[in-house]
Length: 401
Image (cartoon, rainbow, N blue to C red):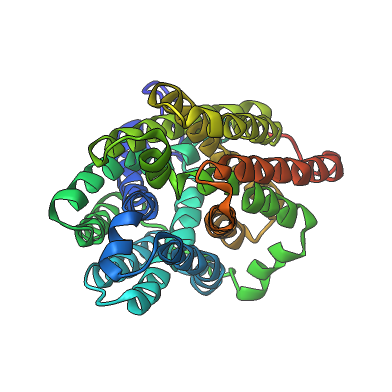
């Protein structure tokens, strides 16, 4: 946030706000590492667990399933509790799940532990977004929310490449052990710096479930669930594609994933700005951008010099997250906690759907680069849902200032 942002009795001073953002972003960093690093080390843990890579991709889908199922359950059950307390609890469960993943003895138990790890993911980001939105001026809301997601994008730039190198030198299990340690650190930071709110005694399950009666909520979630799948479709098999098609060695994989993370960071920053300025229209631009970049991917993957800029372009599509997060705040009414958490359920449906469809295309013999065309189709599918959401909702939803 700008240092000269005016404060009022309702908002935190800039220095205190920065500490809150750092604490929440640290949780996003831990989540980003476990979500994206699991894809980047997929060849390693596939070998370690004695399964092929398409089968190992189900471990990623298990995590995504945990997010999808856990987000609404935790959001509804915890809506009355202070947000600070909820966030500490979510990170505690996250630390346990990743610690168990680090010692999983076989493929079956790994599926269970990854599912457990995913349960608090969506609820954490949802509650964190609501907490930040409540302590900043509304004209900075989307940018503040995007800052809470910045930890996730920083993870793709620095965390994933570092963990990838650790995996290559010390074993893939260290990926999840490191994440567990960062989650514990996040618990400490939130306990120290997050505002001590009193919770919402009026937040009953039926009120939260009221969000599900809104067609705009469902359409917004649909945009994320389908449209974001394209990025995950490519990312899940990026390591394998880079080695099998581009011809790079394992030593270059951390750089490729860091480049992808740079794209996500740029997209996240621009997405927050665009959401504050253009509202839901920003989502349309990001989806069309993603479809274009994904169509370039099959040809670009043939050479490292063309692969890298296209990887940046695909990563920029990640800015969709903050756009849809603030859109849900506008259309969810009183059911803010559930709607905010469901945003990440939708994105992890995309996380499950993208790798699943990409893996099916690869298994059917269309090649590693077919994930680009599959991903473009998903991005355009998200855009089609956006058109319906925009046309039906523009007269009833107030525009962001």
